[in-house]
Image 1 (cartoon, helix red, strand yellow):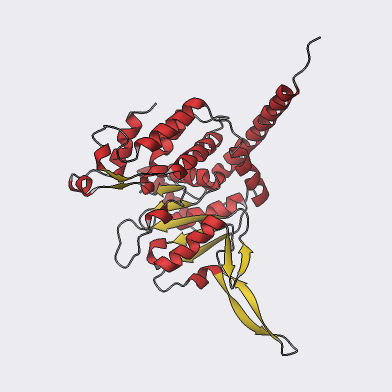
Image 2 (cartoon, rainbow, N blue to C red; image 1 turned 180 degrees about the horizontal axis):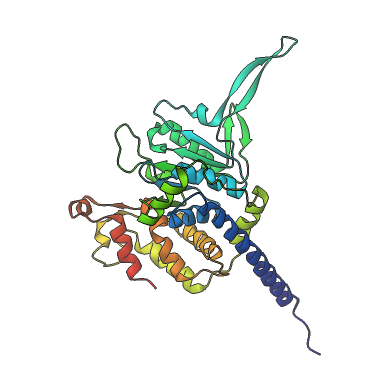
Amino acid sequence: MSAVDPKAGREANDSKAVIEAAEAAVADIARARKETAKVIFGQETVVERAMVTILSGGHGLLVGLPGLAKTKLVDTLGTVLGIQAARIQFTPDLMPSDILGSEILQQDDDGKRSFRFAKGPVFTQLLMADEINRASPRTQAALLQAMQEYHVTIAGHRYDLPAPFHVLATQNPLEQEGTYPLPEAQLDRFLMQIDVHYPDMESERRILLETTGAKEATAKPVLNAKRLQEMQALVRRIPVGESVVNAILELVRSARPGADDSPMNKYISWGPGPRASQSLMLTARARALLDGRLSPSVDDVLALAEPVLQHRMQLSFAARAEKISVRDVIADIRSRIG
């Protein structure tokens, strides 16, 4: 009688558990997307990428003109995912304490004075940082440090942020007067840059008909914070094939200066680091789960190349003179992979 390999049995049980958990997660995600679609019209790609960002456990940078439902999207996602949402309007006079909170001197009934920490709006689970580039670098840095470390330190005391904690920040790509562009090192802390475009004709028709009447559709909670964290943990357990790993490495490394002899490569001033590879790995897994698949493909990597890489690259002056954009360079790299 042949002996049974206990390791093989454990691996089989683990695979079965992942499959069962993935099937349950796919059903929950489908319900969440359906509920979101009741309120957000014609922005399927934006909604998908925002959900991928959150499922991957990261933060997103929404870039688009005013009036394209960026605020409504964040509010709706907070409702549908069952997590607490808050919004901060960034202005040049906003101080770090306006975001993080501050210590307040209080006096009890006996006349004894003491300091009490009053938490700022950053103590939420889904934070919308509206027009983040309008705040001073000092205020930007305070938020971005919280995004990276998931806690704040006030007067020597550490205060942990709620879990899960996600930031969806917005930027207006046109109106740049009086703004403070985010430094490259801070841009890298955003998992993806999500471009928000105008809706198509049919979607805009729905917006007209369904948002200007006596009643307006509202979303209902589908998940909760605990369930969302379970799904985020599941994303990290989804297996990734060797071809997908190779595609990620080839894509990210080709986006660095001097990586190859492509005519486009000479326009790259600096490119993405290993954090971009990590972001692509996580987001490819999350996108596969969002589509009801148990493993990501090279197509997932190619689809996410632009939102993951574009804010992590800088082109030379020669590229600007020849009107070559970051998207052009990424498109060239994508065409040589897969």
